[in-house]
Image 1: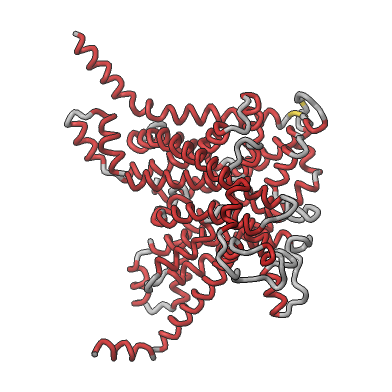
Image 2: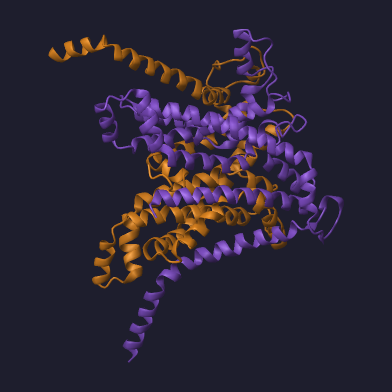
Length: 284
Length: 301
């Protein structure tokens, strides 16, 4: 009772108009912001007559899932399959090599700051600067348009990221735990994979998911290094737009299928998002 | 004796573990990243017009770099990039800061609202391009429909006119990356100690003074880091250009990475493409140095 009266009185405090105003602003901005995503989802269900018409149809008449199946048949399934293989292999490679290096850099400060910064600087190289020689290199090795070419390329860019992220996590880990293990006769290797690795498990997962996301979303290298045998989903989507007759419903359906797993991952990662996106510069 | 030797062996391994651990990473990066950079550096001093049927490169001194100065297309793409930087990154920063300030107060469901605002950034860039291609469509797109309802003429030819092609890309790019600014600045806001604001309140500071004398100075490093990262990203602006305009009409929306892609992989002018890449590399190194410097400052070392 007392509580309710308090709340009622609060409603009339001038400060509350500000709060309501802020809420309205946030709600409007959200609607504005999410409308392009809504447009993609609604188009995925539209008939041909509904997306080539004026005025545009905002809500399709029926929930027709057939475009999802058509989209998968028109290259979407192959695209997602190829992307999955490349992204998973890249992630595994970057994590294995990266965690070792990160441990060495974080614990023993090997190479001082220079080595760590050199590794990071490779990440910042503009892709255009490296794509040309890589293209010629792969052509020489005859591995253009193969999984290997993409996996190697993505690993070059994911490895520095993984090292730098994991280094931060290792540095935050108190040394005493590993030292106790060393005293118990565990050896450095044992201390690394029995003590240090399990303790930074959340960091490992976050870093791996970031590597996965980067490889999944990548388009530039995929476009140049792949022809017809390997078709990552980003290339498939771009190719569908370039065609003569643009099947917007199928494109939207494939686009939705390609983004939903990543959105799910990113929501799961939200705690580490800032850290990952700023290469660990902002701990968040 | 045998035991002793084994013990000594394992001890020597123990000592080398730091080096052993880091060497695969260094080996991989050296092998597959240093080679390309050295090779393309060499290439940038060569004339190699694969597209004209020239089989192997011939040394051409600084011709490629000299050509850069008179290449209007190159300068136009630089100008476009400057526009993306000023209007795009500028808008992302201002809107992102505004939203971060709005979201920096506790209210019910804040976590979910924040997540919803982050969605554009989480979608894959090619999908973003696709999406905006539909939205900008002159005849069937919802954007022009809304403009016609409001009564702004017959709608705008977003992707097809030289005036609007680049702004269209800037809008789509800002839509995608504003959340980045927002979430990074929000993290920064949340790391400002509450005591600072309490002290300011005791001193009778107004809201505006709090923002100007506490919030902004505390955010300085984070703002610099966020803007530097977005600066480096503008060099890579490619996906949206391919999907929305292909650099057109008449090169009005050509970015530097798209022009570089065309030189290398459509005109097959390899030497010139390498020199274009190297110019960008030089600029990126400058930006990255600033970035690393602020990173070191952030680490307190």
